[in-house]
Image (tube, rainbow, N blue to C red; front, side):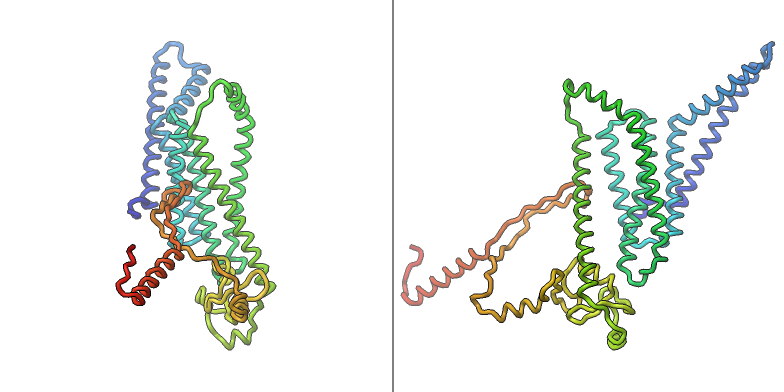
Length: 401
């Protein structure tokens, strides 16, 4: 299904070129027939042709060309041609900048494409309620350009994560192509934003005035509100998550520079081992308090997910103070009464779980869980043991009363 769902680029390009060639041929063939008929009629007339007739013929030719271009078949052929042009441009950018894509990059592009198409179909037929074919074609052109920019942005994001986690590509030269693509995306997005602002101030004010007139006389519920609110909620959650990740990243970066020391050349030469995170040879490394060495980028990525040593699992305290083993030793050195009491552990049993993000990123997720308290189990076991002890002391005692 993966092969069938994504047709070959060469076959799609050849098919689009044939469609465009046939459309252009039929367009000029029809126009030549119309001009030939009109020329024969003008030659049969005794007055002949005048300059006004030439002007009228040019206007007629332009009008006929516009009518054929805006026709149903030719219009969709032009939309398909633009999509093919964007696909070829994306392939060229991939070959020049990114090279061969990795498996997770291809999968992310597929997920992004299907998610975009699903959301835009709901937006077109459920929110906008498009009625004319020409309006549908214009929206398809707009969404094709947006999809092209979003896929490039997703590809840049995945490649940047790969480069940032790879210690062999920390030089600036390996990031120059990626920075150039990001700058082009930034300029394109800025240009689209300026166009939207200009069109919004030109035509949007009249729409707002028209809606303000009917504000108190015609109130209704629209699916567009629900659709837009779900997307705004998702964007707000994503921004909050990104801000938290950036704050955590800056904190870890500062702590690594202040608390962890660089390994000396003697230590690297004496150990002569590889980084256990990326399994590549270490030429420069950071040393944890436990003595293990790792690449700086690998250690930073690891500490963003887990505050422990990847080798010995020793807790790494990023907030200052003692390390995890020192804190545990301090606890064991105290008396039994000095150890703080821990709350009872509660065991969760998941009864049902629905993950809406696997279908679409704006669908919610919920789960039903059953809470089990271990205190009840301990009490029941204690009652059973006490009953057996009573039976041993007093034979024949009926405990069911």
